[in-house]
Image (tube, rainbow, N blue to C red):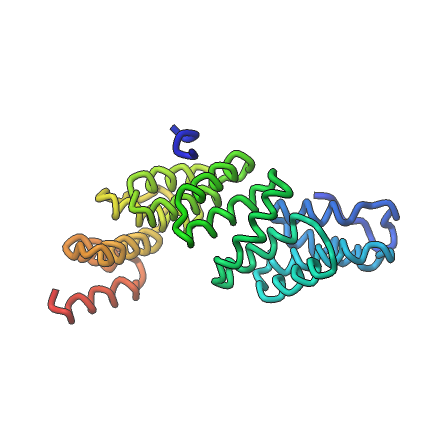
Length: 270
């Protein structure tokens, strides 16, 4: 269990590219590292120097680029075309599965993601996505195992830990989730999504959130507003009102979400 584990290549000028340059590997490495602008530039250079046998590798790169840019319908169509063309590559199953998850089609994502981890057991993104798909099916033991494997494989664990924390929240384990989100913040301290999810876990666990030294007044107010709305969803109206009132009073700017939530409480006579 994760719980137990926790207790650029310079661009040459046009026309100067060596013919032996491995564009497929360079583009893949850039996308894996999150360097999307660099990957796109190299993909353009690759097209200018493409050889006839580069076609399928370029189609794979185009599919992955669509996925990285969150053009999920396009990515899904491109990965499906590669599969229909007879390509047996675990990146196809991984890409199809992630695109299907983003499009709200989690049951359909299970089969390609299972195949991806069977064919390439060392790809953390496949295991991470499979964990999300199992969460949607409420297959908690399977999702926990998938996140554990993803965590073991990656040197950038914040995404895996964020998803695992959300899984624990869905399982009603807010205290453990809060610890997981704290761990995620160690590697991604300014990730607003992780901070908000961690605050939600704290509220659900009956713990108070605290201001970070880096928080501006408005950032802190947004966190207070998020905590107040989490308390509202739990039915803890006194705590919700306290957090929301602080969000309004401690902000430098107007916080519409907090004000609207307070108004809805007043209108309901709470």
